[in-house]
Amino acid sequence: MNINPFQTALSQLKTAAEVAKIDPKFIERIQYPDRYIEVTIPIIMDDGSQKIFTGFRSQHNNARGPYKGGIRFHPDVNLDEVRALSFWMTFKNAVVNVPFGGGKGGIILDPKKLSETELEKLSRGYVQKLYPVFGPEFDVPAPDVNTNGKIMGWMVDEFEKLIGKKARATFTGKAIEDGGSQGRTEATGFGGGVVLREVLKAGLVDLGENKTIAIQGFGNVATYFAESAKAQGLKVVALSDSKGGIYNPEGIDVVAAEEHKKQTGALKGLSGTSEITNAELLELPVGVLVPAALENVLTGENASKIKAKLIIEMANGPTTQEADAIFEKNNIIVIPDILANSGGVATSYYEWYQNMHDEKWTREEVLAKLDALMIKAFEGVLEAKRKYNTSFRNGAYIVAIERIKEASKS
Image (cartoon, rainbow, N blue to C red; front, side, top):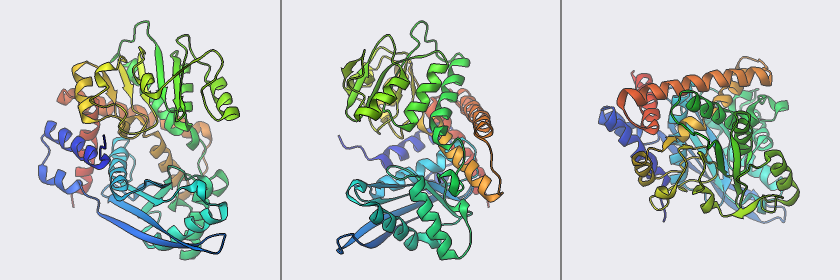
């Protein structure tokens, strides 16, 4: 089943707009990116041959501030995906109320097939083609799938060479020595943990004795989220990565799981756990389910088998609209991606701010600011949810639409 992420995003927008009776002409206008750019990047490979790569940048909306969003290196990068992700960034930044719009970029490639020298040439080549549309007050890229602080370092260095002056704030997600922010690594998982805490504190879900959690995905986001959940007294009973999952109803030691994965390259085989598939993990009898890996994993086909009372979307777009409707009918609360995983973009804003004002904050300062910001974002969405008697997803979109609409008044 091939579900187009851009169409899902547009449907979610329209559904929320209908609930809040927002001007359809405005909704039609913000469906589309302001612009998207496709570039070709010729690279001389290590063996002397030439290869032409295709790159994209989608600049969705800048009513609230500079376009902001990651750059991914992946064989499946395509225009629809980049447009959808730039759209989500606009709404995510509006939900968490940082002064950015939405952007996204990517290059079609399998980074495993390139040497470090070739990757550096490609990263710099991308900036050479797109630098006129980047800048700290115009478009601020960041890392995404298969990109990291080192790649951002190459990109910001190339950008500064091309414009002839320092402009650290043009890229976020940089290494600390290149002007990156403390706390950025754990920010997304930490922010999701704050949202989980606030949902439970507000008494919106009664887990009873079943204070258990299953997390699909075990990358950076999931590990920090798992640590936060554990600190809140929840028991992590299932984890998974791309090779499959592990389950122990008595609880999994997250630190031991991290160590095992580092040593063996996979979660499976961790002592005291049984193997399960990624699909089985979603249907476990847990209190909280956290899809933190791929999009479109909760669908009309498996939604009625989900037993969790609370779903926290730490991945982008993990739930289809068919699944959403089933969850609503079954009184399962879904905290949407544009709220749950927005801690990362919020901390990108902090990095940008520190660069713009030549400041350096400690990790503790960054996470304290992020904690307060996520609480405020959650309260705003909860207020809209209650006002319109609707889902958290619609509430989040309504908050975002209203903020973008307000900023769009010329």
